[in-house]
Length: 270
Image (cartoon, rainbow, N blue to C red; front, side, top):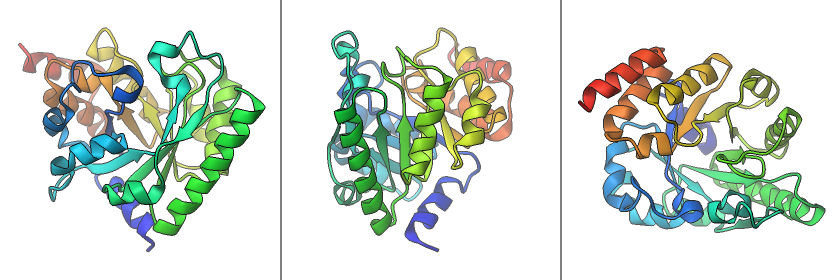
């Protein structure tokens, strides 16, 4: 087995992975749940993997250093079209590299995530695709799995783009050499998972009004072929992140219904 296969094997060793994302600080600034991430991150030790920016990987090293810690996923590029304060200012999107794959590995990355951007303009597309390919090649040499992320312009909270856009972007991640895909959940998610070729992880999306809605996204995504889920604010902003994560794990790994999962969670915070 290659190093990449070993690391992917660890990600899927406990069934469909539940990944927690807390890389929002560079796009949205600090908010409840991530103000002091090095302290708050310990609520998520049951997750299969945890996604952070390079600086937070460094600050949270004690969390990742434990034998039973979640895998460390580090984002190595930054996308202007995800930046919440600039949604109405940026009519075009650009991706820029934050660090090399080897830098992420030096920080403890088990996997890396690379954002892909299409549909903005020729210069931005060409530059991003060139960088995407170069980073995939470096990751291949180091045995590090690559999650190709495709979120159309506007980001999760202001997603702009139809199904054709989503199908192109997710398939392009596979065509350019990613090992996994991370993308938005849509009603016809089975079309995405059916054509992406490589395992596809569904995003939990923005903060929902009720836990039931988020748990239903996870349930529907799994039914429609998702290999696992990546949840952020719905977990990290919960009144009790530990029990919320427990409920989400039950949905994804045990097939517990969204209503039962919500009931378990709400009972825990009474």
